[in-house]
Length: 398
Image (cartoon, rainbow, N blue to C red; front, side):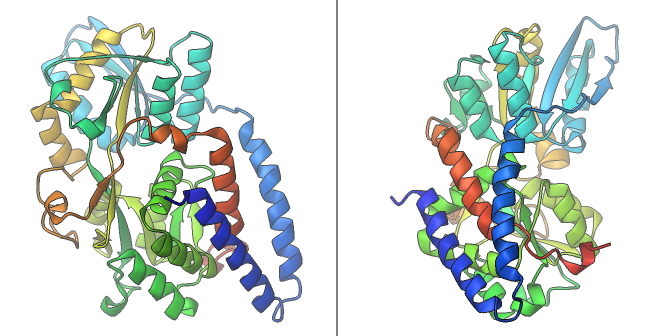
């Protein structure tokens, strides 16, 4: 298998040479701008390497009855999705209060790693969509194993060493604004998206959004696994997005909001749960499950080594994995399940697993390669050379 890093570097080299060669005739400053941007990437990488943590923002859920224990959750999962699960958990354990601290994936990983090195565990339970980061924490000895009848129900691909557990089943989807994208343009495979950007470059230039993998751990994980699927498809899509000046943003919510507003027309590799929640609020926002292959992510949960209330963390983890927790998640939080049909109005096969297109990202040692420091830095650096915004979209120039 060709390494994803090599695929990225080769296509970026070709794209960069082609763009500079062709476009420099129209704009003599482009070549200089391009070189300056590459120098800026190196500087940005150095800044990102230095840890800098924002102040904790804590949401507290008081116990409905007299408190006998307090669970502290550090999470890179939006509170809007976790709120119904926390509320239902507290109907079962009404004497447990919960402090919920929300972070971006990369910041959560850095904070947890630093806490582990200092032998000061970060809270009682970690939740993150960047399961590769949780696997690295576990591999570095920063996790506590947990077994129970509920953990025994978890699929093999979503359980590593009884230390990192997947508790959701979320496809990476396309989203589009149906006011801006006519039915004939709606892409339903990765190849169709690449072809659309090639054939209608002027229409979609600066109008496609995806994760900024320099800032988003989940964005990096999805991009890396895209590169593992098929070299030809990934290369064509990478080239199409580069030529179309794809807009990179840190977070799913930012991209979804801009697609809903019509500033962006298409969002690529969005988490299905967030996309579907947004589509329920914005009727012009539509969700497509790609038909050629669909990466499937399971958000991870990990109990830090030395957690003060590991017992409460185990209760909450068991709830997330239980039939009741999974039912609440399907109805009110994450919407997609491994065995059930797709949610209403999602454009895709009736049942994702049975269709054969689902490609779950296995939680296990293979994800350590994703977190290899040298490979990660090189992959991000090469991606940045291609997809960083050399030309800011006109709607974002205020």
